[in-house]
Length: 412
Ligand SMILES: Cc1ncc(COP(=O)(O)O)c(C=O)c1O
Image 1 (cartoon, rainbow, N blue to C red):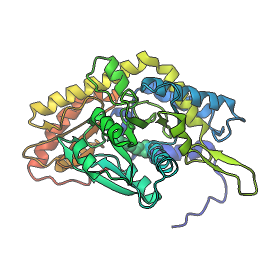
Image 2 (image 1 turned 180 degrees about the vertical axis):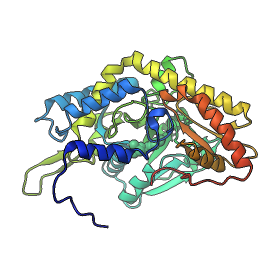
Image 3 (image 1 turned 90 degrees about the vertical axis):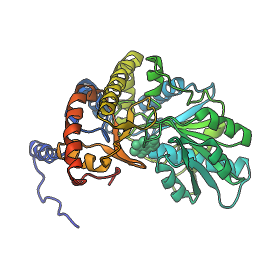
Image 4 (image 1 turned 45 degrees about the horizontal axis):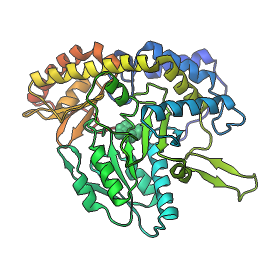
């Protein structure tokens, strides 16, 4: 549908007022009503993100020679990530626009590595647990790689099932830390052992966990080895714009060595404007996203992250205790910021629909049918309100309320 561009420009005040007005119908995430899409770590962080973003909103990460400031900030952000994830000397990475982008780049690197270093030709495949994120399906669709999803065991990747699906054309196996559906960390050590035994590239998708798990562990949480400390891990994705609390459009992808990372890089010289090299899928890269990530990480530091992630842990524990008291079952033993739970008698998706009527925008799981929360620090202050509304929603669903227009799954 076409939309005519206004013939005359309008004053910024009027334009801004219209935007504020449009946002009036959005989920009240500032009040803690969203447990998906937005990570709300407080007004101060919101301000740091936005001011830092605005400072570099015009600058372009495509040109490190023109913007040594951004090049330095990106290198420092990558250095923070590599350090947190136990990367060995010589490990390297890149900032990308998000988790999907990071995963796509890791798959591309693994594919090119397989072709160039292992001499593989023909149809290639990757093997991943059923709970891995659809970003892998997207990457495989784009690159015409076969995707082999294997059944879960107790909601976790099953290394045996994965090994059975591997063959000589497998270019990557995947584990999540944690997976999106249940918030559970796959057995990365066992997958690492499989990768080493069979000479496979193991990617750990820590898009959700990469910037929370290290701090939960520092806070005393029992987080199993999931990163480069596991020798078989070749690459990792870790999103800054999730539990790194950075502005959107920021993720990291890491490789155990430069020898692996070089397969991500794209260079073309055969066109009339000279050599063009880009590390990631994007050409132009928003300076604001790089600057905001650098600013947030420096603003929070280790203590700041420990404190905000401690709030997430307490919110999760409070909500899990509350839902258990109400007869729900928490799926597995989540350790980070995602939790999912089911009710033995009442359909989780019907409850979700009722909660939506009270302004809660959260997600669902479908195998089994239940409720899903991706929690932020703000949720510590609304946990009781959520539980009270959950009581109401469960009763409404029990007495026949349907899904009430709530979207199942996420995205469009
Ligand atoms: C485990 C996991 N991997 C990858 C992604 C994709 O990240 P993005 O939405 O930033 O592309 C998500 C998004 O929620 C995720 O939960």
